[in-house]
Image 1 (cartoon, rainbow, N blue to C red):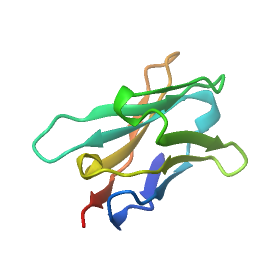
Image 2 (image 1 turned 60 degrees about the vertical axis):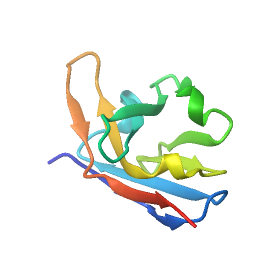
Image 3 (image 1 turned 180 degrees about the horizontal axis):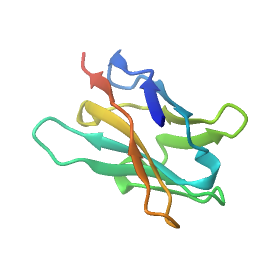
Image 4 (image 1 turned 180 degrees about the vertical axis):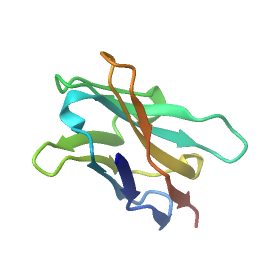
Length: 117
């Protein structure tokens, strides 16, 4: 059974930091294109950071220099370090694993991030 379990969300003041984690079971993250998506209230889900099986990374312009995506292959876990958080970063963050050779696509349940004073 495949599971992606996110954690690390919470309430933080503007300018603060959070680290999100996505622990995977039943799949091998290093073989996938894995990413973090953000869904703000009333908005569509958007990709904010992605890391490929070759460890190439890419970021949404609005988070470049503030967010860092990383992967621990030994722990089969994906991370998103979020610094200098802004109120517009508020929303639910989902991790996703996509295998481009098979089309398999997996999602976590999401973790809520609220940036507010």
